[in-house]
Length: 134
Image 1 (cartoon, helix red, strand yellow):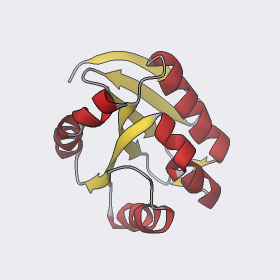
Image 2 (spheres, rainbow, N blue to C red; image 1 turned 135 degrees about the vertical axis):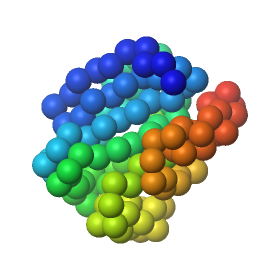
Image 3 (cartoon, rainbow, N blue to C red; image 1 turned 60 degrees about the vertical axis):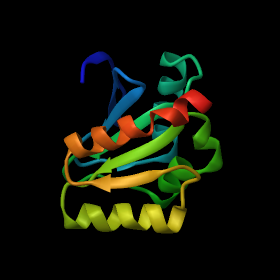
Image 4 (spheres, one colour; image 1 turned 120 degrees about the horizontal axis):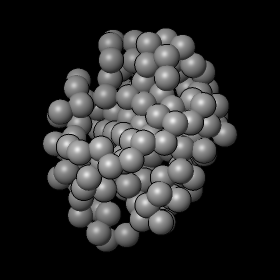
């Protein structure tokens, strides 16, 4: 997977990879706010000129999202930017938080959790048709 371009935001790094895949990594020891999620979406929209992305998300040590940030990340509006999400889970605590996101927030798009980036990327490549349909 080749990195084409990286944008540094206060809360996260957004790396644009080939094949419509975007990797967002939320930095260590950060409580992610809704406006930081929106800033990430806006960078994706701007860089991809409105085309949806296949999003791989990873989070640093000690990083979580507020309930409002999770709700915003999974809102119907967020589907304007994202066609599918692959969440790379770091540990059991993070897996629990990701499960809450998937079950409680119920994003309006395919979303899966993976133990490592390799598996996440493989799954995202299979979701490529979702970008083409957009």
